[in-house]
Amino acid sequence: MTAGEDGRTSVRGTGEDDAEGPARRRRPRKGRAQRPWWQELPILVVVALVMALGIKTFFVQAFSIPSGSMQDTLQVGDRVLVDKLTPWFGATPQRGEVVVFRDPGGWLDDQPKPAGGNVLTKALAFVGLAPSSDEQDLIKRVIAVGGDTVDCERGKPVTVNGKALDEPYVYPGATPCDDIPVGKVTVPADHLWVMGDHRNASQDSRAHVGEPGGGFVPLEDVVGRAFVVAWPVPRWSTLPVPATFDRS
Image (cartoon, rainbow, N blue to C red; front, top):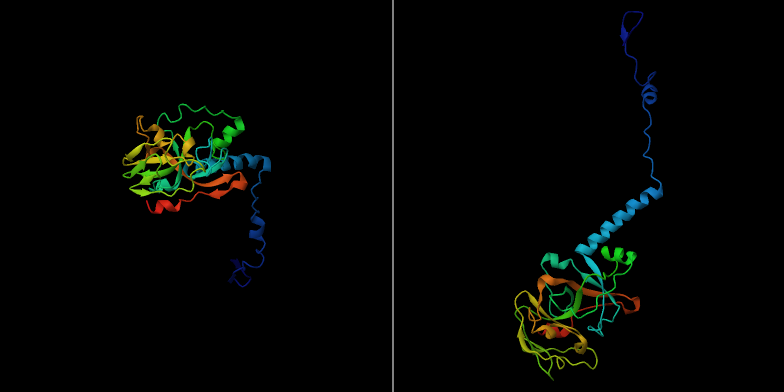
């Protein structure tokens, strides 16, 4: 406030002479300096690798088919994608599904060890972008689950709980059980009975009946269900459950 000549006070409007005062006192903020692309790139790579590793651990992983035991459904060198997510929610393998599982004990003793691969291949395998050459895993079709009774006789179709399976996926010329007939077996709880689609070239549950474990695969050894052939591109296809298992 100021005193006039007549002794009265008057108020100076803040919007008049001081209008530019605050503007002069305020300094414009400096924007954050943007990093050069070569500084951002390592951060992006690390984030991408962490995300890929998380996907491999909890969601989906690629696996390579090492043998002809699942022909013609799967060929040697095919890459399949395996669902690792649904087991986290309590899902268990069902009859007819193609599953990847860890060696239950001694199944791969007679198999040659895969080559280690180069540094790039190992790095891609580590994050799940390529199949690992170090993991000793198998892939077969689930024929029966815990509590089921399987009958595998020479000259007859495979039966599950007394019902014969219609198996068009079996390799042409191969027999359902003739090469390794094992008769009747009952699958223990929390285990699977698995067989290859190329029965005459598959060392599956039948081949390990007389060994510790009885040829059964513990559920805890199952990595996940193979749900699609992702590579090579001309062979891209899904891996649905055959209709015959709806009746078993």
